Image (cartoon, rainbow over all chains, first blue to last red; front, side):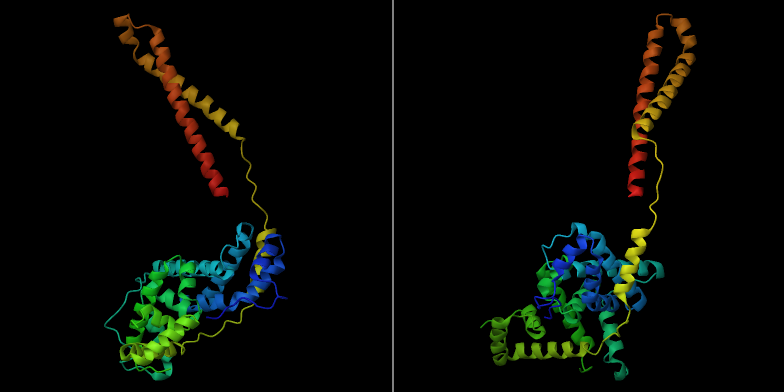
Length: 187
Length: 157
């Protein structure tokens, strides 16, 4: 699993930057943003499928980091806390969008097998997006964090507040469903 | 060796298993056809998912965040002029007492004819009644005033 935190002792770690931010040093926030924005934007874009909204969510997430700096206690990894903010903001945004647009909540669709239908193989990304979209929300979030953000099951549990065994179960079921949907799609 | 759980096979494929567990599971998979098939399928799914790479936005997020913070920090705070708390409570007590006394007099007025007939009822009864009404009204009005104050505090937060 990739670790976004620096190993170079010359580079301040996230907790040090948060301490500086708590003392009013806004350049520390700039450093935190530059360090984590790629991962934060990736989570938001993959969850929301809307780059503009994802940028707004990412901005709001870092604003919340700034507003909460005074109360921040480095008991867990900074990224766990940050990703929790991002995931919650994304899920809220999806809920609002569903309410506004009258979309139905995501439901598993066992009848739908896009990989077996007349799908243009040149657009495999669209097939994957469709397959992920049809996963129940918690399964989709677990896969996005596991496969694309590189979080371990333990880290997903810490980020989402779900138990590790729940995350295990969500991922096993999600990958089993995706296996059926994406069969024959190839790498 | 007993077959690893499905979750541990997912960990194995995703590289989340830890070095020792990875060796142990790998040794098992090489000798177990069922687990080997599961791992092959998981690897195929895992690899297929790589095809979806949403483009980067190229946004200057740090610049946006710092600009937003600057705007938030320099935005003029709304100052609402408020009566001091004791003034509001005192005003509500005065108003409610007035209302209560008025209501009490109204009640005693409506009983005048009864009093003339029964005579035995003393005027003290009406005074006590008026005070009781005033007390209840004061209590309610103070409660309402405090509720408004609490709500105003929450909205101002």
